[in-house]
Length: 224
Image 1 (tube, rainbow, N blue to C red):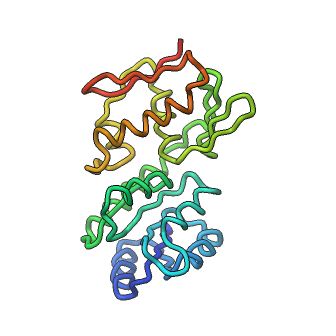
Image 2 (cartoon, rainbow, N blue to C red; image 1 turned 135 degrees about the vertical axis):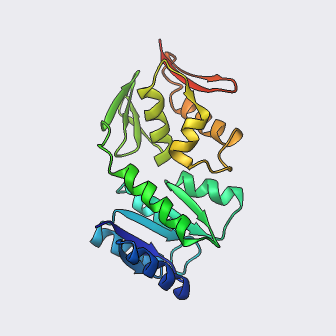
């Protein structure tokens, strides 16, 4: 049975969502604030975390950041009325896997949860990758060069892993967006370029590594 940690301070909404998820066979642990959420996460080790953002004591962004300090793999889905681009970007930079805007239909939420759970139970990829002079650790979300460790966001680490696994091949932009952002319209074009630029900066001390933008198509990582 898939275990969901659901954090929502609006009790009437929480009751509807909890009942709907339990009818689908999920085991739901509901908490009303961020501090309770962290305690429950450490105690129950859920399969997926569904987080409201605006909550008392500790907001959803802070909860996600705390979870990612110890667990880079558990899927995190934000449920929130915050729809500004900067809020969405901030959530994904903290390691969110998906972002559903309020008001939402319960059917959409269930489909998104199912997709995240299915993706997360696939056979795990290798933990570490030697990328030129760097070592990428996908569990810790770190990039290390000569004992100097750089902390990556969850998506930065996953994007770099994908580019390396398909090195010397063009990875289409659409493929990246579908894999990591569920075709969210906020993450097309310029926003994705920002992530690529950040990864290039992390890798800049090894001049053999190049990430080339194939205009209108995607990106290709090469190591000379």
